[in-house]
Length: 204
Image 1 (spheres, rainbow, N blue to C red):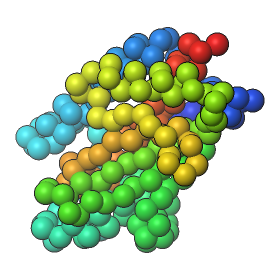
Image 2 (image 1 turned 180 degrees about the vertical axis):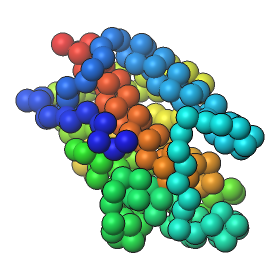
Image 3 (image 1 turned 180 degrees about the horizontal axis):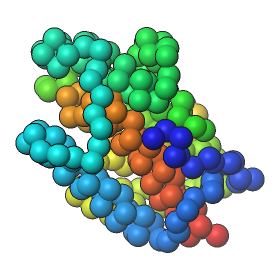
């Protein structure tokens, strides 16, 4: 699944405008993102109902029963399953650093065990931006946040230290297993990059 991600390259403007298979306006990309999310919601309902799904689910190294009620164990189990699906052996280092590189993207995986139920905050870096040159792009990112469909789980922002364009969303630690999360991140990376690309084209 991880191998399906588009390889991205950095353009002269600093914002990554990688090779993507589809085009269209930011609204069109958001609609595709919304449809993909609804697809995953149907898959999760299918799994919980015990009916057949077109997704092969991998069991985590820690059983759901063992991890239940223990956010740290839930996080370790999820990251272990994610790394196994991605073919990464050093899952312990990923869990400790709370960062994972998927293709050309750095992904932050930050657990929030103080929330009830515990959640996982996910941050996808999409490329460097610079002020004042990219002020209009920043404005479009804010506008996109307001216009996203209700099913869209995340929003665009800026890393407070690096000014990287970031797409961020959160999930319950028990919403997906590692295999599902690997595929879901794959789609989110692709679609958020497409959305940012559409916003960048609108600034030309």
